[in-house]
Amino acid sequence: MTTDQNFTLAEQLDRDDPLHKFRSRFYIESENTIYLDGNSLGRLPLRTKELLSEVIEKEWGTELIESWNRHWYQKTTQLGDKIAPMIGASNGEVIISDSTSINLYKLSHAALNLQKGKTTIVSDALNFPTDLYILQGLLKEFGPEYKLNLAQTNDGISIETEELKSKITENTALVVLSLVAFKSAFMYQLEEITEYAHKMGALVLWDLSHAAGAVEIELNKSNADLAVGCTYKYMNGGPGSPAFLYVRKDLQDKLSSPIQGWFGDALPFEFDLNYRPAQGIRRFLAGTPPVLNLMAIEPGIEMINEAGMATIHQKSIRLSEFFHSMVASQLKNYGFEAGSPTEPEKRGSHISLKHVEAYRICQALIQPKTSTIKIIPDFREPDNIRFGFTPLYTTYKEVWQTVHRLREIIENKEYEQFSTQRSDVT
Ligand SMILES: Cc1ncc(COP(=O)(O)O)c(C=O)c1O
Ligand SMILES: Nc1c(O)cccc1C(=O)C[C@H](N)C(=O)O
Image (tube, rainbow, N blue to C red):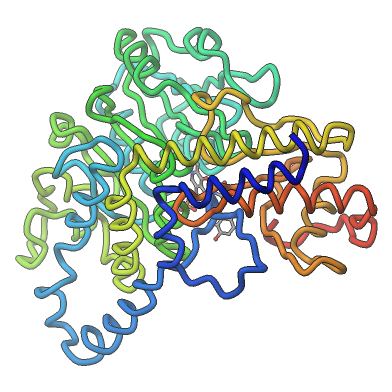
């Protein structure tokens, strides 16, 4: 297909897009900025802007501490119940709490205690560093007999199922995996891995950060044990918004949080001097939630539930397929290589392209010197440009424009005007 034919196709796909009405519900300052980093920090929903000023003025400003009984105290579980359908969980199995890192610590610690006698943890070499760091810390805490075994990758993009299975043995206490890998977007088969781990007597903790709100997830149908994930990516909860955690109902009262904070007590306002874990999911809370950030999550979650995960996942696949086909036809001899699986069922909602000049190309997209179009993907070491497609607001035309700009940048060597010196946040 020629580039003009692709443009016509993009316009047609946007016209037919069942999700097109959602874009106008986000704060989009300029149509000349194409935001492809919703897999790091999602855009601001317009309703959140309004809601936060209500929460600040009416709730914090006027109702002050009474707001806890009116709106705030139950919010961690209410929002958990709203996230549940998005990830195939049930009421009472999800709660908002702390950060993903802390939730991962709490649930891994609890799982290792439940699995006393088994001393290995399995993860993989594509996992997000915080997950591995937390597990490395747990090894120190639990003792020298504990080991972390990482499944390795052959191509830097994916993990072969057989390789992962070969690491899971009868001594495996816990398997900790990102359902969608942060760099390559490689996606595991949740049900198959969970079933295999259970057969070997292991529990599985899924990090859903790059998956929740982007792809369909069936935690209950897969009999998944534990999960964590952030709310600032596809859920558009805002920078540093608190994370969620999921614990299958029958496991909840068997697990103990290592952080015995008062919010996880059965009756925090009895101020008993001895901790008594709450029944159910609340026991995984620790301290007071950051209320402004907490309240800000709701509009993003509600949009996802209104749109439906099946429709969202379908559009994610269409956007990525359109991007792949344009890259194949327009950028053939431009030095790009695939950094993500080509099969849609093996991928989340972002695509990495590898290039020796990836960092400087990324800078040229973000700070155009000649074009009026600014494009924001992100860069992940050593050579990945990561393009995140957020079905609620990414358009097919934006995908077309991105490939068009990549071609221009390479043809005119625009990246040569930039330094390879990395910023603090890339
Ligand atoms: C897969 C994954 N896990 C965990 C995190 C970190 O979570 P937090 O900084 O909220 O602890 C991220 C991204 O920041 C991530 O992509
Ligand atoms: N949320 C982020 C942010 O506000 C700024 C920079 C990066 C992030 C991220 O979430 C990084 C992300 N977890 C990653 O996959 O690289």
